[in-house]
Length: 626
Image (cartoon, rainbow, N blue to C red; front, side, top):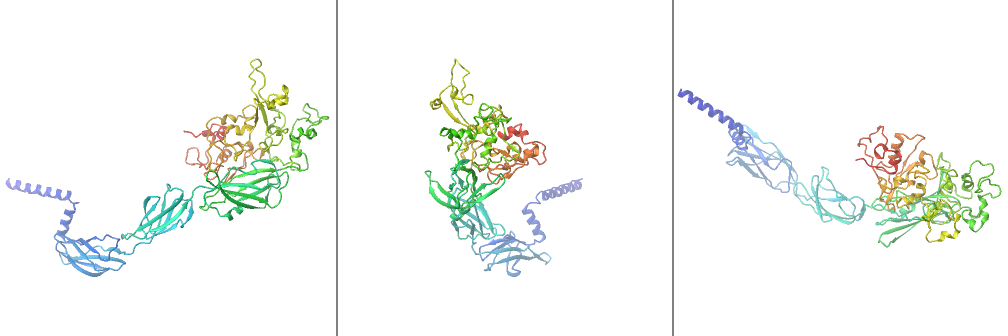
């Protein structure tokens, strides 16, 4: 019985010992003790594998059997012998090593006399400080990105000191490094960089001074001749004013302005000329470049011209200009008499349009035998490019041919729906846009009195001098485009006059509330409101339905073609004509995110399904669904 108990006790002691050893097997002490008992292969603790050192004398350390003799080999040659201490640690100091790559390993004798060899450790002696250089930006240069690039030793740590901040980056395996700081302010900056290589050597600093300019040159809306100006002298020069804080090379201005003549709706002719430039500082302290394009010869009479600022013009930092373009029309037949408004001085000009003896209607405008009272034939008799400029896009298949008379009565002619042929030309209304007089009678005894000359002419009840009464307001309908609009609905009153749901589809309703097309410009334009009609629509005619333009955007324009059918594909191509991340409108670009549900290629839904509910709503006041 006692023997069994003794055996059982030894058995449990053995079991418990095995369990403890198993639990502690991961302990370095246990591993070390087990290894010593069996004869340990020596190991090297330092230097580490691949380590770079900035000293020529290296202390080699490691672990081996207690009190064992350790042979140390440097570059495969026995360098010396040391003895492991009571804890198995050993160390060996090398002599002076050359600045180069080296290797080290150690050997000891095992319990049976065999040679035990450690793993070979490769290390580098590097006593030379790294050279760091800045490759970008170039010293005293202009740049449009807050990025600093350079070259140094591979995997060196580079410290960049700029604008009171220090940041560290690590060079790649080829020694290239870069630092991007979106918070770096525009203006002159000085940057200093230093490098510390893998060995700890500190290199000499490198310094650059540069000017950060991320602002694009802006063509101011102070255009001359003015946008859509008429009666422009044929001896005119075109002027452009560009706001830019950095100095632009004058030679860059030679191709900055392009002037073309509209020969027809599809044919254009380049006008040769010379660009002159000067620079001044305005009252706000801004640097303004004044460019003058002087044609080599006189312009043609009754011709329409287009002025374009070269979109490739850039400042010294490489920022492209926010371009601008506009049109003007030269004076008509200089030997003829202007029939518009001139009747005040010469009533004989009235017979240019009116036939007092042969007309068959009360306004004396309908020729004998004419079934329609259309003004278009009268207008085009002159506005065909002969004695007056031709009407742009009049030959297109889709025309703005709403039949509204000069008195706002449906059923007359399309020209007089927007133009008043009886007005006298003034610079404030160069295209003779419709106007009216407004006076609120507020007569409780006669609530039917008209308040507007559009309802009834003031002269029906008053002498003509009533219009000089300060209580009478003179209002001119506006058709402002991108260069001059401020974005208020009144700037588009000529269009909204009909497009109010009365005479044409109601567009006015979209110019009185929230709209995704309410714009704040980036290109210096005066707009701060609703997008003008003329950004999407042609005025007189188009090759596209809905009078849509065949080129969308102001810069990096996109071609657009729409047939007679408005379908999903047409609507998507129309919307992405600007919403593509590339095309600019007032300096603004908007991306099209194809990952949004509904935006996938081939999706059968129109954009308006989510962005307004109808094509008209989505185009004029788009909404962003929540």
